[in-house]
Image 1 (cartoon, rainbow over the protein chains, first blue to last red):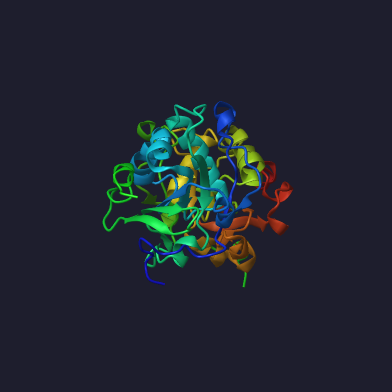
Image 2 (image 1 turned 90 degrees about the horizontal axis):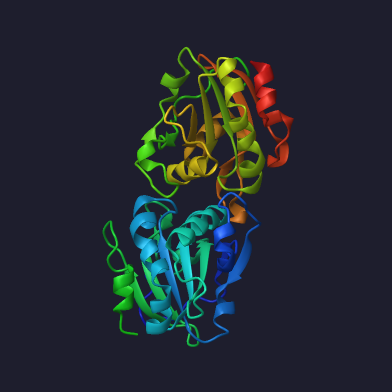
Length: 183
Length: 177
């Protein structure tokens, strides 16, 4: 399928595999303890108002994603909610749910400073599955997720922002680009 | 066709790994992956190879690999030169996993390495790979353990149904040496 664009409706019945991370227990979470993955249905998020921000990366624990791309988002959760109305943040990668869970715990522990702040989005680290492919954002050469950011309005289920990287690095899918997007 | 004891361990596909160094000590710090030259590693050496279906998965993380890490001195005492841990995850994930499991030694006696698309395991035989595509995990390495002396397989056995039993335990391998 061709790449999804602003104004497009998001495909129905998208599911991700993930292991929930309880931010309120962040200090005690260990990257080595793991539960069984469960399913996250995107349609479930569409039952409430707000926006979902999806940030997708080619791989957990890879240099760019781990050092530059995701930390700014986690450090600025409050701004995402108050400025853009983001109520759900999904970090998506090609890796499986176990790897995403370990990576998520470590990144949250390193970057979250305001976990008790009520005005922050719910954060999920989810395994891509078929989502990126279904919206034309799978890198066909590597078989991995492209690096991109996507904002979806949960009521209308339409795409309000798409920022896809065309070169190495973080520009269109980074926090600054997302925060300055006109929704 | 499965490979058998006293045959050569395949060296046509090299695993990729990121050696541990103090400079990338933190779990989320990373360096660039390099090839582990199997032919070179095996030459004149005793090497233990053990594979697991996935980094950060419950059985591998809680039982299988910690069992090996607990017995490092025993392996050294028995003359094992290197322990290679294989999964089909990429080298970045494996490097993070190794550090998370507490193996932080610049000696890199234990190497956490990628079996690319489980190709090495497939060379060993169909029963050494597991197609977990239906669960969204793709082709994975089965759980197995082997002993390679000067490039020749002296012991190799895999677990049924990916569990962790005596078959792939450190003490079983230690007994075979």
